[in-house]
Image 1 (cartoon, rainbow, N blue to C red):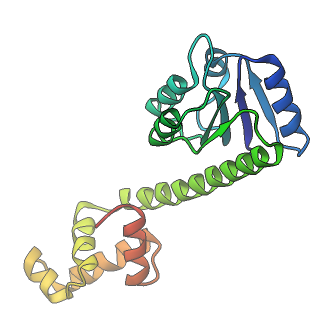
Image 2: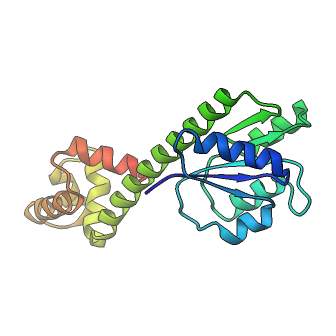
Length: 201
């Protein structure tokens, strides 16, 4: 998926200047004069990053960032403002902003932060894809296989699993074999790693 840099700034000159800067390094860029026009156009799931000005007439940058977080948007957000103060920077970072840049900014610094945010976004998306893949495999386990999985993750011996579940050792071995196949795990070590990815303790 191609990454897009979204720029939201009500200042026409600032918006066009940033569009030119981003375009000059070959990155796809879309610019918006207001938070609402961005919301109308943005498609959830699109990769990239968002560069947001703080002071805007309809929805200010901080509120737009908050709304996006509430809606589950995972785009890294770079907050920029010409009226920076420490409290605003702290608030932006606590709210999960990727970075906070004061205007006037250094062009090379802005590009470096944008490229860093895009790389961060792509890493996050790959990690989420891995999690989703493992959870999909988990969903294919039968309730009994999942039960056996819990014991295997605790390094419980087959004979103890059999006794606790009141089934034969041969049945435990069958469940273990099935769950290893469904989880696409070549070893117990790999199974533990997959369980950790899926958030199973």
